[in-house]
Image (cartoon, rainbow, N blue to C red):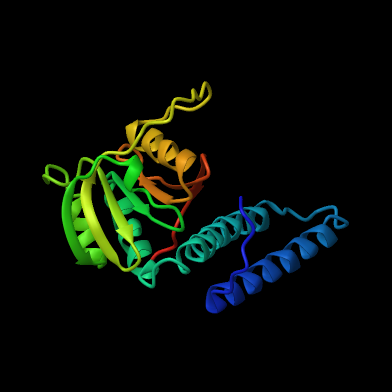
Length: 206
Protein backbone atom coordinates (compact mmCIF):
# COMPACT_ATOMS: atom_id res chain seq x y z
CA UNK A 1 0.00 0.00 0.00
CA UNK A 2 1.38 3.37 -0.94
CA UNK A 3 2.09 6.15 1.55
CA UNK A 4 -0.71 8.66 1.98
CA UNK A 5 -0.65 12.23 3.17
CA UNK A 6 -4.40 12.43 3.56
CA UNK A 7 -6.86 14.19 5.80
CA UNK A 8 -10.53 13.59 5.09
CA UNK A 9 -11.17 15.31 8.42
CA UNK A 10 -14.68 14.14 9.44
CA UNK A 11 -13.90 10.49 8.67
CA UNK A 12 -10.47 10.70 10.26
CA UNK A 13 -11.93 12.16 13.47
CA UNK A 14 -14.71 9.55 13.62
CA UNK A 15 -12.26 6.73 12.99
CA UNK A 16 -10.04 7.93 15.83
CA UNK A 17 -13.03 8.18 18.19
CA UNK A 18 -14.25 4.67 17.36
CA UNK A 19 -10.81 3.12 17.82
CA UNK A 20 -10.38 4.94 21.15
CA UNK A 21 -13.74 3.60 22.37
CA UNK A 22 -12.83 0.06 21.32
CA UNK A 23 -9.48 0.32 23.09
CA UNK A 24 -11.27 1.46 26.26
CA UNK A 25 -13.72 -1.47 26.03
CA UNK A 26 -10.89 -3.95 25.58
CA UNK A 27 -9.22 -2.51 28.68
CA UNK A 28 -12.40 -3.08 30.67
CA UNK A 29 -12.61 -6.69 29.47
CA UNK A 30 -9.00 -7.36 30.42
CA UNK A 31 -9.66 -5.95 33.90
CA UNK A 32 -12.77 -8.15 34.24
CA UNK A 33 -10.75 -11.31 33.71
CA UNK A 34 -9.73 -11.13 37.37
CA UNK A 35 -13.37 -11.72 38.33
CA UNK A 36 -13.84 -15.49 38.32
CA UNK A 37 -17.62 -15.58 37.75
CA UNK A 38 -17.80 -12.99 34.98
CA UNK A 39 -18.94 -14.13 31.50
CA UNK A 40 -17.47 -11.91 28.81
CA UNK A 41 -18.92 -13.52 25.68
CA UNK A 42 -21.51 -10.78 25.10
CA UNK A 43 -18.92 -8.04 25.55
CA UNK A 44 -16.49 -9.73 23.17
CA UNK A 45 -19.22 -10.20 20.56
CA UNK A 46 -20.15 -6.53 20.91
CA UNK A 47 -16.53 -5.46 20.38
CA UNK A 48 -16.28 -7.74 17.35
CA UNK A 49 -19.27 -6.00 15.77
CA UNK A 50 -17.75 -2.60 16.54
CA UNK A 51 -14.49 -3.71 14.92
CA UNK A 52 -16.42 -4.63 11.76
CA UNK A 53 -18.14 -1.25 11.73
CA UNK A 54 -14.82 0.53 12.29
CA UNK A 55 -13.22 -1.55 9.54
CA UNK A 56 -15.90 -0.38 7.13
CA UNK A 57 -15.27 3.21 8.15
CA UNK A 58 -11.51 2.78 7.70
CA UNK A 59 -12.08 1.35 4.23
CA UNK A 60 -14.13 4.37 3.28
CA UNK A 61 -11.50 6.69 4.69
CA UNK A 62 -8.66 5.15 2.70
CA UNK A 63 -10.68 4.80 -0.47
CA UNK A 64 -11.59 8.48 -0.26
CA UNK A 65 -7.92 9.31 0.38
CA UNK A 66 -6.91 7.53 -2.80
CA UNK A 67 -9.70 9.12 -4.85
CA UNK A 68 -9.95 12.69 -3.54
CA UNK A 69 -6.79 14.06 -5.23
CA UNK A 70 -8.07 12.88 -8.62
CA UNK A 71 -11.82 13.48 -8.52
CA UNK A 72 -14.07 15.70 -6.42
CA UNK A 73 -16.89 13.21 -7.04
CA UNK A 74 -15.51 10.48 -4.78
CA UNK A 75 -18.62 10.57 -2.56
CA UNK A 76 -20.82 9.92 -5.61
CA UNK A 77 -18.60 6.99 -6.54
CA UNK A 78 -18.70 5.60 -2.99
CA UNK A 79 -22.48 5.96 -2.86
CA UNK A 80 -22.96 4.11 -6.14
CA UNK A 81 -20.59 1.32 -5.09
CA UNK A 82 -22.55 0.88 -1.86
CA UNK A 83 -25.84 0.59 -3.74
CA UNK A 84 -24.40 -1.78 -6.35
CA UNK A 85 -22.99 -3.96 -3.59
CA UNK A 86 -26.33 -4.15 -1.77
CA UNK A 87 -28.06 -5.17 -5.02
CA UNK A 88 -25.24 -7.57 -6.00
CA UNK A 89 -24.80 -5.89 -9.34
CA UNK A 90 -21.37 -6.56 -10.74
CA UNK A 91 -19.32 -3.48 -11.56
CA UNK A 92 -15.85 -2.46 -12.71
CA UNK A 93 -14.88 1.21 -12.30
CA UNK A 94 -11.51 2.65 -13.35
CA UNK A 95 -10.36 5.97 -11.92
CA UNK A 96 -7.37 7.42 -13.75
CA UNK A 97 -4.70 8.97 -11.56
CA UNK A 98 -1.29 10.13 -12.87
CA UNK A 99 -0.73 7.55 -15.62
CA UNK A 100 -2.72 7.61 -18.85
CA UNK A 101 -4.71 4.42 -19.27
CA UNK A 102 -5.56 5.00 -22.93
CA UNK A 103 -2.80 2.71 -24.28
CA UNK A 104 -4.01 -0.18 -22.13
CA UNK A 105 -7.77 -0.34 -22.72
CA UNK A 106 -9.97 -1.24 -25.64
CA UNK A 107 -12.29 1.79 -25.85
CA UNK A 108 -15.99 1.30 -25.29
CA UNK A 109 -18.89 3.74 -25.65
CA UNK A 110 -18.04 7.43 -25.25
CA UNK A 111 -20.22 9.18 -22.65
CA UNK A 112 -18.41 12.36 -21.48
CA UNK A 113 -20.91 12.77 -18.65
CA UNK A 114 -20.66 14.24 -15.17
CA UNK A 115 -20.32 11.62 -12.45
CA UNK A 116 -23.49 10.89 -10.49
CA UNK A 117 -24.27 7.83 -8.43
CA UNK A 118 -27.54 7.26 -10.33
CA UNK A 119 -25.77 7.27 -13.70
CA UNK A 120 -23.06 4.87 -12.50
CA UNK A 121 -25.69 2.52 -11.10
CA UNK A 122 -27.75 2.61 -14.31
CA UNK A 123 -24.72 1.65 -16.38
CA UNK A 124 -24.31 -1.60 -14.45
CA UNK A 125 -27.93 -2.73 -14.55
CA UNK A 126 -27.82 -6.38 -15.73
CA UNK A 127 -28.73 -6.63 -19.39
CA UNK A 128 -27.79 -3.03 -20.08
CA UNK A 129 -25.69 -2.66 -23.26
CA UNK A 130 -23.02 -0.91 -21.17
CA UNK A 131 -22.83 -3.13 -18.08
CA UNK A 132 -20.42 -5.77 -19.39
CA UNK A 133 -17.15 -3.87 -19.22
CA UNK A 134 -15.41 -1.12 -17.28
CA UNK A 135 -16.44 2.47 -16.68
CA UNK A 136 -13.54 4.87 -17.24
CA UNK A 137 -13.45 7.95 -15.00
CA UNK A 138 -11.08 10.86 -15.47
CA UNK A 139 -11.32 13.77 -13.03
CA UNK A 140 -15.06 14.53 -12.57
CA UNK A 141 -16.29 12.87 -15.77
CA UNK A 142 -17.36 9.42 -16.84
CA UNK A 143 -15.36 9.30 -20.04
CA UNK A 144 -16.73 6.03 -21.38
CA UNK A 145 -18.34 2.72 -20.51
CA UNK A 146 -18.07 -0.89 -21.73
CA UNK A 147 -14.29 -0.60 -21.95
CA UNK A 148 -12.20 -3.77 -22.09
CA UNK A 149 -9.18 -4.02 -19.77
CA UNK A 150 -6.11 -6.25 -20.08
CA UNK A 151 -6.29 -9.38 -17.90
CA UNK A 152 -3.50 -10.25 -15.51
CA UNK A 153 -1.36 -13.21 -16.55
CA UNK A 154 -0.61 -14.15 -12.96
CA UNK A 155 -2.13 -17.19 -11.30
CA UNK A 156 -3.76 -17.12 -7.87
CA UNK A 157 -3.87 -20.71 -6.55
CA UNK A 158 -5.68 -19.83 -3.31
CA UNK A 159 -8.20 -17.41 -4.80
CA UNK A 160 -11.10 -17.81 -7.18
CA UNK A 161 -11.05 -14.64 -9.27
CA UNK A 162 -13.57 -13.76 -11.94
CA UNK A 163 -12.96 -11.78 -15.10
CA UNK A 164 -13.67 -8.41 -13.45
CA UNK A 165 -11.10 -9.03 -10.74
CA UNK A 166 -8.49 -10.29 -13.20
CA UNK A 167 -9.09 -7.23 -15.39
CA UNK A 168 -8.71 -4.90 -12.40
CA UNK A 169 -5.41 -6.51 -11.44
CA UNK A 170 -4.24 -6.51 -15.06
CA UNK A 171 -4.70 -2.78 -15.53
CA UNK A 172 -3.26 -1.94 -12.10
CA UNK A 173 -0.11 -3.89 -12.99
CA UNK A 174 0.44 -1.54 -15.93
CA UNK A 175 -0.72 1.84 -14.54
CA UNK A 176 -1.30 3.61 -11.23
CA UNK A 177 -5.07 3.67 -11.83
CA UNK A 178 -7.41 2.76 -8.98
CA UNK A 179 -9.94 0.14 -10.01
CA UNK A 180 -13.05 -0.69 -7.98
CA UNK A 181 -14.72 -4.09 -8.37
CA UNK A 182 -18.14 -5.21 -7.17
CA UNK A 183 -18.66 -8.97 -7.28
CA UNK A 184 -21.83 -10.06 -9.02
CA UNK A 185 -21.90 -13.34 -7.05
CA UNK A 186 -21.39 -12.02 -3.52
CA UNK A 187 -21.79 -8.24 -3.67
CA UNK A 188 -18.39 -7.90 -2.01
CA UNK A 189 -16.31 -4.89 -2.99
CA UNK A 190 -12.58 -4.56 -3.61
CA UNK A 191 -10.23 -1.96 -4.95
CA UNK A 192 -7.06 -2.66 -6.85
CA UNK A 193 -3.78 -0.72 -6.81
CA UNK A 194 -0.34 -1.68 -8.09
CA UNK A 195 -1.35 -5.25 -8.81
CA UNK A 196 -2.85 -5.86 -5.37
CA UNK A 197 -6.51 -6.43 -4.53
CA UNK A 198 -7.85 -4.98 -1.27
CA UNK A 199 -11.30 -5.99 0.04
CA UNK A 200 -13.27 -3.13 1.56
CA UNK A 201 -16.76 -2.25 2.68
CA UNK A 202 -18.66 1.01 2.82
CA UNK A 203 -20.96 1.72 5.75
CA UNK A 204 -24.54 2.61 4.90
CA UNK A 205 -25.99 5.14 4.57
CA UNK A 206 -23.42 7.38 2.84
